[in-house]
Amino acid sequence: MKVTWTTPESFMIINEKGDDFARIKVFVDINHTDRDGVSTTLVAFGNNEPDTIQAEIVRSKNGSITAGKVWLNGIEIADRSEPTVIIK
Image (cartoon, rainbow, N blue to C red; front, side):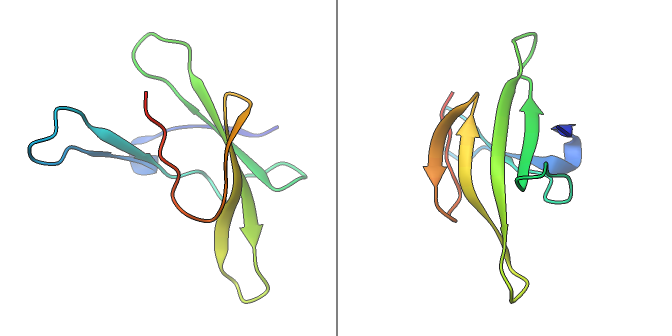
């Protein structure tokens, strides 16, 4: 299994005015998948154990690329092609 760690290019911190929290948008690596087409990304917050995000990469015949199923630490959290929100 190829595992990708988040890098400065693979996430975005979003802190909207008036919010007392921030959102982190993680972009999974669509170019490194296992045989089943699943990309694995590790995200570490401080000294805590890293979280594992796995995303099924779906490539259509017309060239578009979307995420199918998404898992957080082995638990399926989404099965759609819309952005997935994880609250920690």
